[in-house]
Length: 281
Image (cartoon, rainbow, N blue to C red; front, top):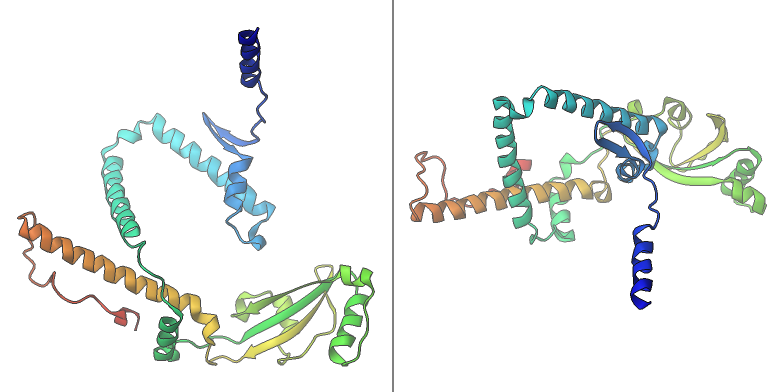
């Protein structure tokens, strides 16, 4: 009986229903599932998660798989042109992966390094266009925003009802280039000065209110916190190139001593000092 019970238990495991996969597209044996699309969407900014973006991704996947299928039917996977470029791609991937793995021990630039770089290159960091830091509030009706504006501008409490507080959504954004920003919003806030709060306005069937937290004119020095990411990227790229050159110099010397390297171009030194950050000047 014990063996029979065990058999039933095993059989039960084998017949356990498996949730069906939601297939969004299929080309031959290749399928695109809803889970795969959601995984791709997880890397997108929230403002890019639109039905149009999703449909474009699915359409591009289908079109690409169709073209691949046609190419395979025509035997192009054995084409010499394709094989030659596969070899080139393989070599590029090998070198990229090597540098990626070998450089993982490098530390990221610290606060002092970033500050020193900012100080030395201050003239490179300025606003090329008028720059605004903005707080916004929005609601489906105007009264909550009117009452909030009175509180913020008249320095007197105008308590909002709990139901009104629940209606208001707020957040912050920045404008770096007015020509690439929503023209409707820019018409409202472009004339405002730092600290000013707009009256509620209707944009796309929603009431909006804006406050200018900071306004910098074209040519104004950019603060350090606005360029930390760019400076960090520059320093990382400099470190990557230095490490690449040092790796090449080290192994070039090793291979030369072992008789595995003949380097006839005398201008390509394998003993010079690492490059410095002048590449970014």
